[in-house]
Structures are given as C-alpha cells and as structure tokens.
Length: 341
Image (cartoon, rainbow, N blue to C red):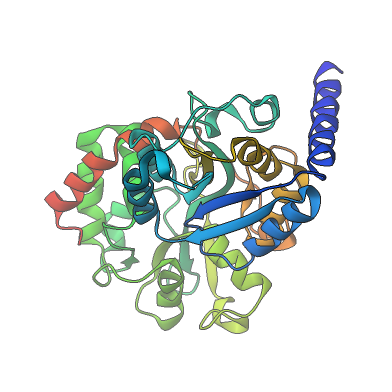
C-alpha cells in the first residue's frame, strides 16, 4: 500500500509540475544524437504541455560532446540526449554534465539505469539479442558465449568493432566473465564470421534474409520496427523465417543498451532542462518511446507497444551499466588483438 501511495503521489507531482510549467516562458537548447524522426512527437508534446520551445542541434554523440567541451561556459546546451551508457559516461568524464536533484527522476528511473552522481538518467532501453534463420539453424545459440562455438563456424554476422553496440557488448562480457574469457570469446566469434563486419543492425538482419549469414546480433527495436511497418528488405515474408533468442535466460540475462540524457554543465535554462528530463520519465513520454520507436521503457510498469510485446517476455542482464562502460577501452584492445575489424 505504501509503494502504491508513493507512486500515485509522484505521478500527481509530475502532473502538477507540467501544469505549473504550462505558463512558462523560455526555451530549451537540446543537443541530441538520437536520429529518430519519431522523436519529433516527444518534443512537440513537451512544448504543448509546458510552453517551452525546444531548439535542437543533432549530431553524432562524440561530436556533440567535443562541441560542448569546446564551448565551455559559453555553451548554449541545456540537455544532452544520446544512446549507450558508454557515451553517457564519456560525457560525464568530459565534464559537460552536471548533477541534478529531482525526486521525480529518483522515484521513476531505476537506480541501475541512472548515474550514481545524478549526472545522467536512462529513459529507454533496447535488448541486444540473437537472431537466426529458422530453416538453417534448428538449434540456435542460447547465450552469447555459444556464439563462439565452432559448431557455428562461417555462420555469424556482426557489426564492426568500432561500433559502440559491439564495444558495449564485449565490455559486458568482460564484466560478467573476466578479461581472459572475453578474449577467448571474441576470438571464437571472429572465427565464426560469415563475412567481414559491416553495416548497421538492420544490415545484420538483411544478411539473414539474403542468406549471407545464418546467425546475427541486433537490437530489438530494429526487428520490432519491421514487424510494425515496411522496412526495406525486411518486410512481410522476408522476415517470416527469422527466429530470435533472448540470450542467457538461465544465466546473466539479455544484454541491454540504454538511451538517456543529462543536464549540461553550463545550462543557461537549467529549470527548463530539469523539467524536460522529468517529462521524459513521465508515462506519456515513456509510452511513446515504445510506440514511436519500438524501445523498452526505462520506467517499470509502463505498457509496451504491440510490436515490442510481440517479442515476448525476457530477463535482462542486471549488470551495473556504469561498470560496463568503464570496460569499453579494454574491449577495444581485445577487438584489435583478435582481429575483429
């Protein structure tokens, strides 16, 4: 009863905060590396609720972080939005974020999905899972470790080692199994490549359709999107023969990628920035992360869109994502050592 009452009070507080902000004047300068057109709805809804105008600068995460460093105290940035914990940690380490106090964010975002110093918070998640050709692979790998099994030689497609998703996955393997085991795993996966690493996650799925590979890894939202609407090379019958596995359900659980943000260190519109961050944790925004971009909400209890729910229930890896991010430099060294291009 106490938890329910607390949750209701937080929801009421959130609604009250947006109602109060509805008469606000001013703007919000958003630096975002989220490249999804569907996010436009998030921004327009925020403006409708609060009256705060969003000025957005889009770019790659590293470029935006470097830009904020160069701008220093004169930076107009209020909020940085980006994808993957390693980039959020990179922004923190670069000194371009600041700690904030928000009872709403503390209550709604699980502690495992927020920075210990309150410099960044996660707002949506994607599971990085195994996809396979159901005709050619009657017994698919059931965990990440098995991707290195010689039984799958010449069958695996994956992205390059320079991709942040690849780096974070290997960083999680390091955290869960240690450096030596992670090196052996990476070498085994390289030995099983069906082709040189190339393309994005959608290209890994297209590789299954074209027959270039029989097993691949991709974030769930790429496949869920293809279930919801036409995607070039992944529509209708083209994906009917693709099966999927949420890995390591009897062990560490499925690896998760996080999308999140933080308030800029020198935010000129700090109150508006905090209001925006709290809005992203609201039920309305959380539901749209799932409905608009086929992601998993960060806030527990928020409903999933049909395309995401169709993938089924699973247990995520509970590993500390901050610790995983610290392993990224070592992961890149291992990639170089085993010849993962």
